[in-house]
Length: 169
Image (cartoon, rainbow, N blue to C red; front, side, top):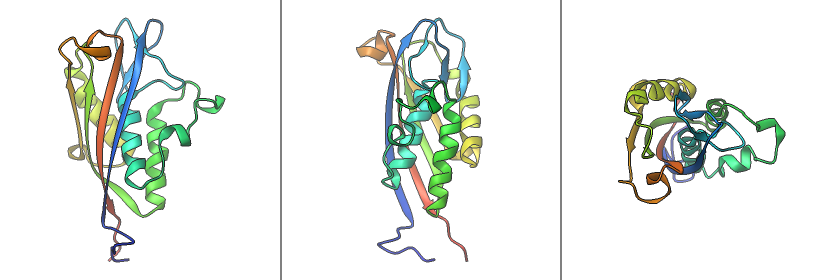
């Protein structure tokens, strides 16, 4: 099927998520468990990076957000591994005839330093989406001690996604 104005070849989406950092929880970002004295508070594993990416993918096709698909009021999703939610989201866009062309994402947190974990995050995210490693960018930044992420109270993430129409020639 050829792309038309009703059936565009490319779609762009953005996502953002933030989770409070608390004691007694694991810190999971991009599917990677990171040793730290605090972890993310959430109904699922609280993986803000994976949630932002899933929202970007859903948003590209106007399919809502992860809260609509995986409500925090449902016991089915309590403690769920967010990478599994991302796999489900990618299945939804595949059913609509799209694939992830690329992801560009940024983690926003003061501590811990996550630079050494970025390659593993990229790998886990690429595997979950069924795409190549060079299609996934994960960066990290601080807010120079400002705001909720700068004080160490939270971790935030933002993501942009480009979807491409699957063509069958």
